[in-house]
Length: 638
Ligand code: BGC
Ligand code: BGC
Image 1: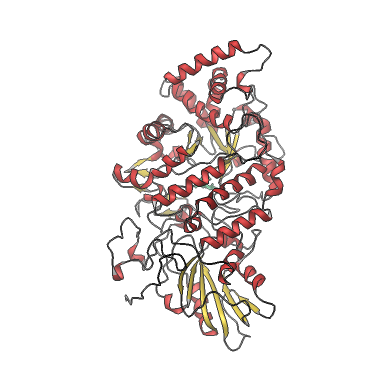
Image 2: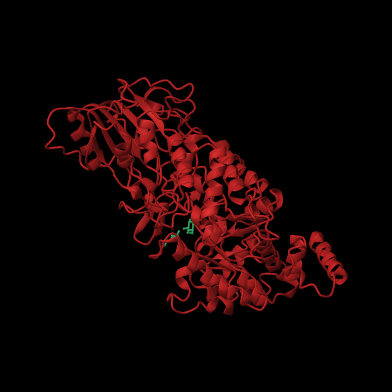
């Protein structure tokens, strides 16, 4: 309050001293951000303020591309998002056009306040087929390399800004404690310290204006990152069920049942580091804390995040998250906004939200002061992004989207993310001049990439621009080696034994609660692949493409070597680089690897004293080739 009064006085003073010819201070980038914010806020009507707090889904506004989205100006909409679905738009030009289409309408309004467009670029700009798709966070956790993650943040920002989309709902700073969760791969690790280190590196890379970049006047942030989902999203208890359409979520959006000290110890440090690294937006979690929805948790949102942690940015809800607070929509809105949510990801029925907000202000259930606080935070981020000076994308950056340089970075990330679990009989590295290699199983960039790529639930087909692991193998082998491929490992016309076989197995893509799974053993089809290949090869190498450790105990002895490749993204050739020994194995497990389904949830926080058959198959941090890891001692635990 004091700070606000002081700022208002400062504005009045500064504005009255300013040369008469000057435009309104909020339009002038030479004023400090907070002065611009107060000046603009003082000119806004209630409708304009509520509009800033409203974020709508692309598909809910003038769905027909032919008509301009006049609702943007009519309701003073402050933000548009595109959820996981690409709705048929896959090129850079599509996304550039989409963002511009909305922005043009926003800047037409009386005060010309730009809107902010946001998407989930959780491992690169995944809506665009042709963008650079990095390993999902679980793979980056295995690299233990904050500098690499910083660069990935920067490259992702560059590719998004090329399209005029400055806002990313990433990084996910969840600290997943149960790998049965369909979002385990979005978390860097089950270890709080590792998540904290890598996520703040990402934020710094994503938000820092690169040296030598000719930014517009007033631009302080290169792009806007969003640590999510505040707080405890990775700590929910199995069976705290939520029904989503025809699907039962067993962990996702559930209830985190821990005391406050545990909540703070496990899940708060990434947010403190994010705030210290300059994060200016935070997304609230769908989940509850001890039975109360996070979207209603005033203490955690306002007292802890904005107060104690000193967060100056804005809090955005999750997708329709406010609706879950109370079956009575009016009560839900009043509770959530008063709890501290500044922007509502509505996402569809925004007129009802806007009317409800007006009613709540008229009734005195939401104060003008709360509205001003929310709008101030949103405008602050917009000014820092330089959107008032340049609301559109930067076409100069278009050449960088999916460029060789960016793909080289992604390929390097893939190499460093691989964890070698077993390597008997010197199965690895593979000799490039070996006579024959039989490859079976997955051969799809879509499956390699996982969820949040081209579509919310990912894409199983091999349509994502990039290289598969098989293509990488074909690229690297010597001129006299033959590589044969069959998805099911049926090499009927191949007689005799090949020196090397590679089975690529794992999970089909999924996102959110759709990926909640109690049984983490390999699919039957992949058992078939392994069993079909085994008798045809001298040395069998299994590569696992998955969003989490899978239960492989029963197959462990069947193969000579096992490699966890996580969800490497578009540059599958990076896997081949390491299989052939051009690069060394480097990665360490970011999650504890279970021996059986019965052990779950199993993590560093609950497995410290477990030994023998009760212990994990591979402990957290394990990885042959990295310092200190020795092959495991095989135990027969039947
Ligand atoms: C959207 C996603 C969103 C999900 C929420 C999907 O239809 O595409 O972005 O996260 O719904 O449940
Ligand atoms: C997810 C968020 C995501 C949002 C928008 C939600 O369902 O939980 O992580 O940012 O949709 O796509």
